[in-house]
Image (cartoon, rainbow over all chains, first blue to last red; front, side, top):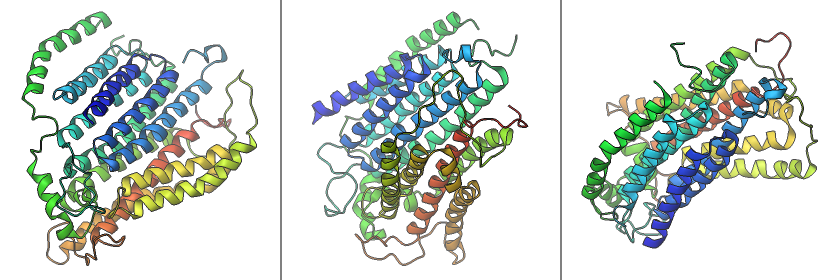
Length: 86
Length: 113
Length: 253
């Protein structure tokens, strides 16, 4: 049991670093979804099912969707030759 | 093992702040802010955890079984949902900024130019 | 400030604070050691006092109900800010076409996606209502159920396109849900004050533990939170997705 908690904490540290060091916003969205999933599993292991419920719904659905929609809408407004810079 | 949750929370806070300080894109900055928020969730839930205890739901177990702290879970629960709403507000501001100034780089948007 | 200088100051601050952090980590209570007395007291007496099985919901809606009122209004403020920023600048259009990025091919929607979305959207909304209704017995509650319902409504957009989704999801209904949910929570507090009890006292009959309809006033507060969170998140999704529609000729950019 303590091995599981330690492994998940280290995995969470890596996932958090992954979110920060992914500089392109489009790729960072996927890193954030992975971070949300690792957080949800950690919350389940720490005996918090209510919080894991909320984190799955928010971290894997709501927040990545908001980021993707914002990036898509910014891309629409740019000139065609700059559309891939975002 | 005893220090690992507190150190991971401090690491996430530090890495998130590093991302905010060196970010070149406002949308990336909002993502780093979510990492900082997740460090507080880990800290609070690790503070309430107890080995060999059940979740604080007494449906299948009688009240009196050793259970994890429910007050900290209630704090983190509302925090997760409201944090997503605040992220939405920050993204709306970034969107308006992009429309007005055509750039998302904090370096180009400094006030004294 | 130069970016290099900013990074240097940040690293210097980290170096200065690091011994404090390590010292703090050494002084924290042992991970997994039970030290918090309030949680133990609530776990021991919550079922007998409030007749609910889910202690987290009892803390959220009864023991610390005032904090949840504050969180509700934080949600209201954030959603209002988002709507003012986005809808105020652009206006609404129910019959617009989705926007196009110049240079990218437009692929038709696959029928498999439409079928799966049409089958699963009502199931997910039903699941969200189930999670929200069983707040007092099993893990769940208004916050989780509201977000799940909002995600289920979004599947309609994925399967059937922007115009069908906008015909189904009306912004006036969502405005009413969100504001009405927050108002319901605040009015529940005043119910106790009419009987000369403190704000947010539990004045309805408590029922039996392990049943869905137990907990008294907590059920009404849970309903308020579900409406507010579901309506708020759907409204946020709606405003953001409206940003991706094609601009009409007379609208400001």
